[in-house]
Image (cartoon, rainbow, N blue to C red; front, side, top):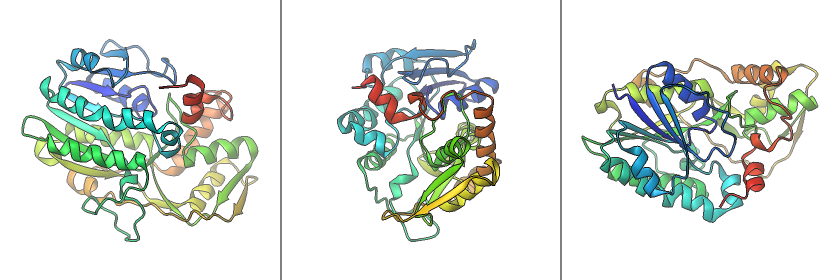
Length: 327
């Protein structure tokens, strides 16, 4: 088994959930992150090294990647609104820094490279079965650069450097580095505090996945034999619910007194994906529901694990980026 893992962006939402699971399984982990959401999102551990640094610093990459078996690349300016806040910054981190990272990893003797892309690379599709063989029609710079990075990575795949792309649905649920700016988490936070959820449109489909299942998907890929994951792409999601259904699931957990306020939306874009490939090829199955994500988040809010959850910038990517003026 590949034992030493290098994770870019490990101090982020998914990383803060994934890394404790990897440590429990006996992996040694190095995290490279700017830790703009706080350095307390990961507990100290004898098998964990945290490096506060920028993925654009190629000298730092050359020094720190040496000796690792696997790179999991999570670091990016995440989602369209955060990207649009500073497009040049988004390009420099999400695209320009990517190929140097891949080259340095391969030169350092890394055996596997796992890339966190996005299911948004498909754009809006009318077909019901949006699978990995379909053409990509990214609609924003964020998703266009994700698609470009996928192609760059594929060109470096070899028997000694096995590359894999993951296209996640929107992640939801509680983590040490919490995000409250994605749909299920937004609904839960607002419903708990304001007893009301605003739903714009409602018929639009949105694929989501519980953060614990997202973590399990990365571990499935890590533990799979090379021939099953070499130069492969995997959608990772659960059921495709409508926005209204997500609001109704939230209401069912938070309380019947929560009002759903429906209004018209001109944005009727639906996103949906099929995750049959990772189920069939790697025997990956989701074990948590959207309802579980809402339950976990509500518990965290009640237990005061998410202080000032309506206003604290650290739960919202855009607010944090504005606060620190990241360049």
